[in-house]
Length: 64
Image 1 (tube, rainbow, N blue to C red):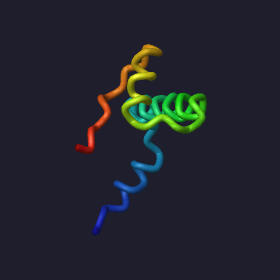
Image 2 (tube, rainbow, N blue to C red):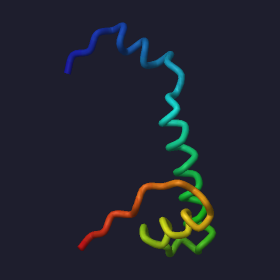
Image 3 (cartoon, rainbow, N blue to C red):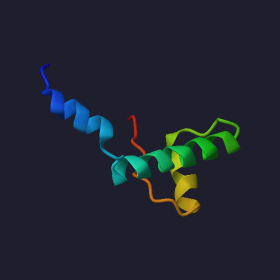
Image 4 (tube, helix red, strand yellow):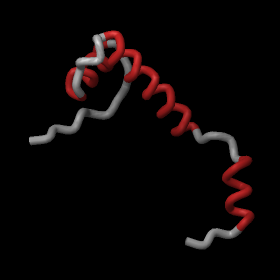
């Protein structure tokens, strides 16, 4: 894949987007909740716990 050099340089110096910042914070919350629950919670229970704690997260996907 060819990309113009100025595109690469712009991506390197561009500040992180609001979305990437909120994603990073959400991942930190998920990891903390998972660890606090002895690392045994699956996606559904993690989602439910995060919602109970007041965090806005997308619904867990079912594998059925």
